[in-house]
Length: 587
Image 1 (cartoon, rainbow, N blue to C red):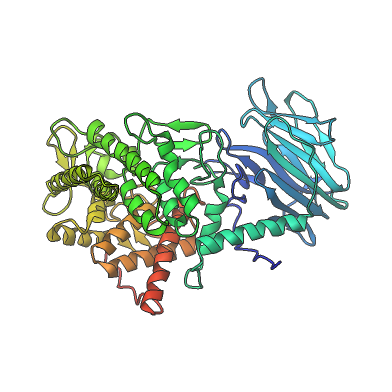
Image 2 (image 1 turned 180 degrees about the vertical axis):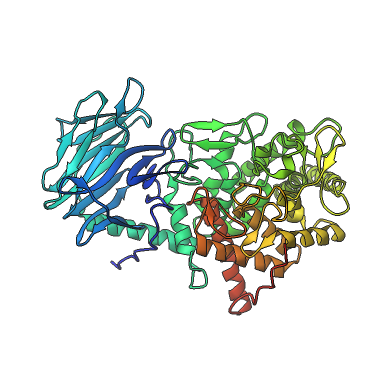
């Protein structure tokens, strides 16, 4: 059997070490923006919870080590001594050491009647068992080979150290499992090297499927694939399908627009997994037709929604995924119909043509300056997305031989597109308070998002939008607030930083509108940004530094979407690249 490539190396402080399908990973990140000194086993069942602290030791004391990570294994090294960890399955890891000891301790020492860890030596199989209120799961440590381990804090209550310690005097090996109530005693049927080789092969197959086009021209493609692969979990709790979480850091949910970008990145190489990503929020669609704001292992939130980009996403998905059976097409049509009617019925003031957001969170651009004068807003981006969704519904209705529906959806799209144009101030799109005639403009990139409708907008509006886009373009990409704005903040979430979804949506609109040079330039800058700064939640628009959660899947997906399209264009044109970038306009 050929040996799988080891895959990309990455920083454990930025990207958790995990495995496709697993609900836990290994990272020093134990809460939002909180870094521990040591790597922890962190579970994402019932939320993000540090469970076990892994402490390399020599002579009975903690020692500093060099940590390296690649898809097949996590390694702590100190000279010739090392500890290695690899996933055997979605809920089991193997750990071995030689010349270094390892303390495996409960992450938090306090046990109360309703929180914390409990620890015992199981007399049934000789394993050591941690239970944790916060996850509702058990964590079994089973010695496999080598020097015997010692234990501290067995059956103790209150606040004590609870730990299993592997000695540093020789070689040792053990297994750690996460499970529910009971399972047969652990048996080591494979060697550690076989376990690591199997994990390497699993990731290699995934990367070859998701990014078969990768070359030296797209150097971050394999790492982007790892970010998606390692953030994928198996169905559990409210997660009804295999799901790509936004991160196995603290952003460990599926939000109801983020999932569209992950679906698009996976569509060509993993069509079934891509379709699962698209459908997952629709599994929780309510009777009004609304999608939830987010889905996680143990919660589904409906207090906000997310923008209706699903028609735009479905059109693109269907170009990549083989023809859907009629029954599946009809199902997609009915789900999209319900989601659209929610906006047309529940989010339109009677007698008004345009729907509205009730808060910036509904737009996905939580704190964009568009929402500073008011939160309940008829905005141009929402209208543009809805027009695209209505057009997709009309097309689907035609394919499904529902001619009456097709005509009705097309007419509604025409009316909303006309009402969108009424928001044009002469220089830019305005936002309007729902139910009144009060309007305002802002310096937010959100107000330029109607570029997604580039092939339907009047040319003067289109040209003006493109001109304003240039003002948002920094050497690293599109700033979400004009850098010259008094409201610009380097780490201001949607008030300055560069984000993947805005980049992908705008690049697509520009390309459909015929502005290919600008689309090429925006794609190139964003790809270069990811290659330099990784796959952070967002990026400082002026320095390119990664910000917030540093292993965000829709960023990795944005890179894969743009890189795959770039490689296709290169092959089609036979050219070595897209030419020289035009100079960045002054901002």
